[in-house]
Length: 435
Image 1 (cartoon, one colour):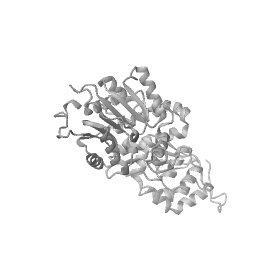
Image 2: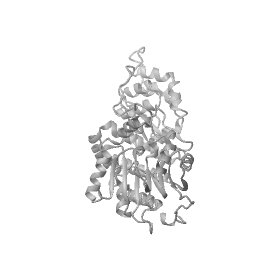
Image 3: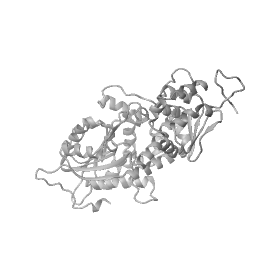
Image 4: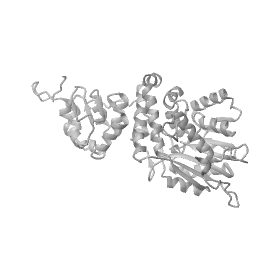
């Protein structure tokens, strides 16, 4: 077994990495820790109940020393100096539940971290940042900065998204009507629910015009056009998404019913529309611009027209911290609203809010399907985007599973209507047609 020793020690007083790190790990985690730590000298700490956290080199400790918070740990995972054996979501949950406090505060206040890094040979220059990490430049949520953020997340290659998302190519919460429903069918069920809430294809409604904000790869637009006869305008600021969506529409013969634009929602001026869907888009808008967001969408609707806002939310709202993994690697400038704030902003813009539905458990199941797709196609994913990028997605989706499972995250569909001048809503008397 390989061993290490303190510089001041003789060759007969060899110690393992785990022995050096025991004071630090005892400070970080309580006795409930269900994860075994394994180090590059094969020494271990803890018991392997749900999985194993493997430190493959001293570079892992060096990353944490230079960034003693979740960002340092995430960088080590992305670069491969920390690896996970077992179900990643369960390992993350086990670590979180047994952590004695805020990991950043614990690491920064721990002299054992420096001593352990020095003793294991991990001292050295600040590690270079992975290419997958970004800090957008410019005014937050300006047109230019939003394009940087969206491109970072979505323009990583459509072939990669095909592996993760499956045949539906839908990057938002599905709706599992039955326990054995496939991901493809669950995404179709979600699109159908939204179409029905928006009143597409209702008796006497005629041929309706739908605006889809953040249309992704075109799946909702295809569903609305092919199943409900809608004329659809889909807007995205991702060039790769737009190209992919247009090709799909051409193959299906729907390009005369659906127009895909590379356009920001703030640049849409050709209303009125009969309905607007915003699916997984509001998280990119930011609370400070949310009033303008809903005001603009209200102005694009005809009287009696409906808006369906489908977005992740959190109690009290949350703006991703600058030094969080999600901000640097996944959703730069992402921000979640409390559903109460969403309702208030919609009402202030003029909407009458008619329905709010939480699909939280459905998103956890959706993420499990995406993680399974990624793991089953791991080698192909690495070939497409590199191992570091694939690791980013595995960590982000696995962590999000826990967020939806423990109700730290929610997924709310909020339906609003622009009333007629006399107060008519044109809403159906019950929700019977939405099931």
